Image 1: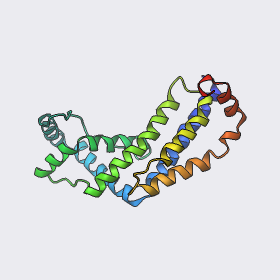
Image 2 (image 1 turned 45 degrees about the vertical axis):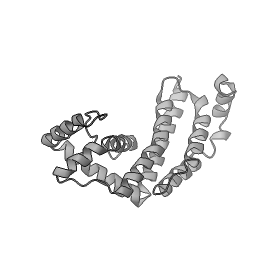
Image 3 (image 1 turned 90 degrees about the horizontal axis):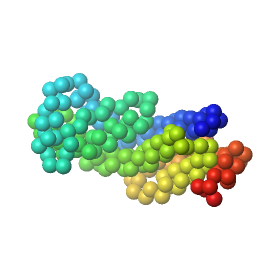
Image 4 (image 1 turned 30 degrees about the vertical axis):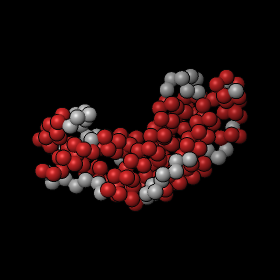
Length: 196
């Protein structure tokens, strides 16, 4: 991959980072649900005893792997995605843990919001991984932006995250509105046999 491709893909990844961050900050229901997850993650990151007790519970639940709760980093949206994804994955263990310990879990509505959040952010995470791979090139930029936008627009079950999803879509469209007019990207896409 040449330096121009690296720069283009780096800019794309960074721009997606900013778009998702704005989206996450745009909806109160999402912000509140994520805040509960941060408190849960903080609870387990500050207590070895809490981690050990959760691990005991995880081992006792069939089909549940003993995994640590992930703490996110405010500057990286994908760390928030991984944190929420892990909390959803460990929901049964966390509910069992909360029966005997003072920990606030998401409400029923917040669990629903978190599930939808992971579904939407999972699409963006997949795109981020694709553009960060060694095999990606400038030819991928137009198809990736188009497919990401279409995937987000066609995500129907967005009650509770609609504002966040719309903010991400609008931001991507605004930031990349001229991408199809950039000669480098158009030519790179046209000559790439994957997109013929």
